[in-house]
Image 1 (cartoon, rainbow, N blue to C red):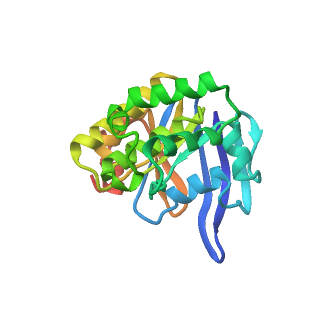
Image 2 (image 1 turned 60 degrees about the vertical axis):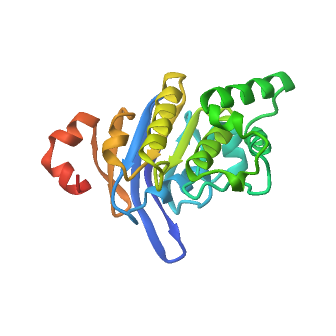
Length: 235
């Protein structure tokens, strides 16, 4: 589904990614673990075209997307749930969700309505608040909203950045449950998450990121079994 090969990228003189390489299979959930500032979010931004790599290649379904515009990348089937959520505060929950339709190819009205119904099925709390302004939602409800909004574009690959940050344990469980369901429906996931133990329950493979590159790859049971990986992740 996705392959990064020796990707280098950053911001001005700041060289953040220093040879990032990873692969994600169809319907697979892959986590990026590591301390703050090691390049996890920058990896997602490079995939989405928010920043352009200076070296290396990014391929999605075998097509080179390294230097494509973000809008083209979205329409190819990659969605993003950003760390800062970016809910439109003055728009209602339903208006926020319908904006997600613009992330993918044009869909018939019946398909759009079907996607909206599915979003409410996944997150019933959003259905109860469909006419409320986005700014009135709790932090957990806003996180549900941005995940559901991303799904409105029918992505094949979804990038999710720190979904559990600042949320109550009950809400975190709901979010992780939704991630498991996405994978069961064939959506590939890249999950950036500081809650390592929680994320290990929902992903198939993990990459440990240090200094802008993946320094280890493991399945969840190996993360807990290997003292060297636990030390790297402080768990």
